[in-house]
Length: 313
Image (cartoon, rainbow, N blue to C red; front, side, top):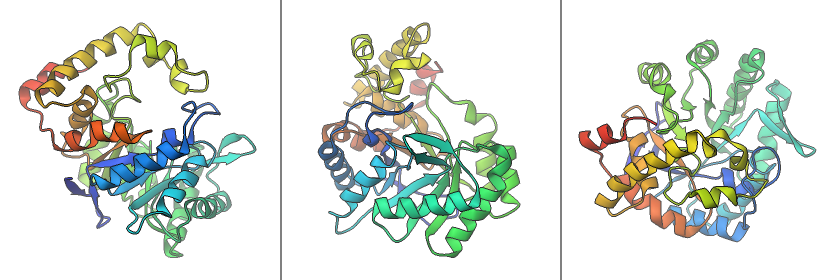
């Protein structure tokens, strides 16, 4: 598995990371439907066997369930991977609240440490810059957690350059986690150039468009998504976008066929083709999904013709 330096953190991370969002299962506005914890742990183990060396999770995923499952998997490993999690979306009483006050950040970190069963979190990220007026307070709280040894590195997710500038006045921003795929590449205009200038490590999420570009998402499967899977309500999975996106999948399929792999692996490779991207967070729910994605996506090298054929959605 190829690795890249994550900004100025000193960490060398595999170009593919294990995304644990779906391990939280169903429930809430952003659930993924039913999920078997045994499948989750088997998927984590297989990803690590294939060279993935980091897991990205958050307390908002399944109201803490994702972190708990990751913690169970870590407890079974002699050589645990790097663990990245987040704060700012606080699961309380069956709801997820945007909270960036210092006291809340501290308590959220303590709860994550307990669920994960670790003494220190390798990368702690502010999940969303909401409320915007509290981002400086939240960032200062993250700096304090680093000084206390509760977290090793700090970063943010979903911040724009102006927000990054504001918090950089307090302490350097080590990493950014933005949305990036063939379906969402707006970060190319300002955010990626900013991160390149400031040497901020970039780990992108949803490189397969939340499964839409995987090659396994058919109209029939979309229609049968459970009600507690957020994708059943998202416009990307509905017309008029759906036809355009499924056409893109067929272009990805042609590239994947040339490498004897899936459209999803080709979609991930497209994000990794950008030199500013350090790694891609890829969600897995079962070990067989790992087998079909990780080895190929980490090694595919797209040429100019491939990139031209994909264009944009």
